[in-house]
Image 1 (cartoon, rainbow, N blue to C red):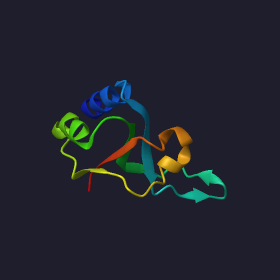
Image 2: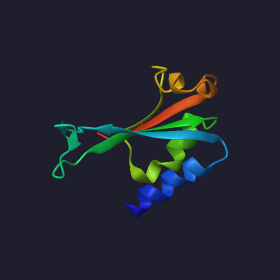
Image 3: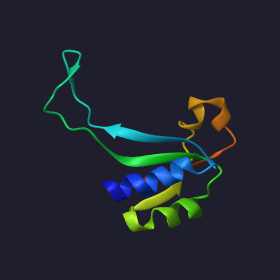
Image 4: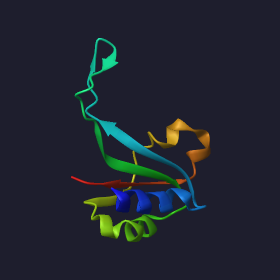
Length: 94
């Protein structure tokens, strides 16, 4: 966990990065509350900014992601107009 935090934090702190998002998976809500026994997770992190796919791939190499790709779906770009002309690169683990 420490290595993941350290590497991902370096990318977030890079002046070329303007935002980062972790997509939360399998959140189960019961009667309007999160069950204390539920464990949600993320297998994908999105970085928004001017970092290239190659830069993020090099930075995360030791974390052994299954994919580092440009996101072409535009759902992240639609979150804020300042993301419109920025790269959105995701890191994904299967």
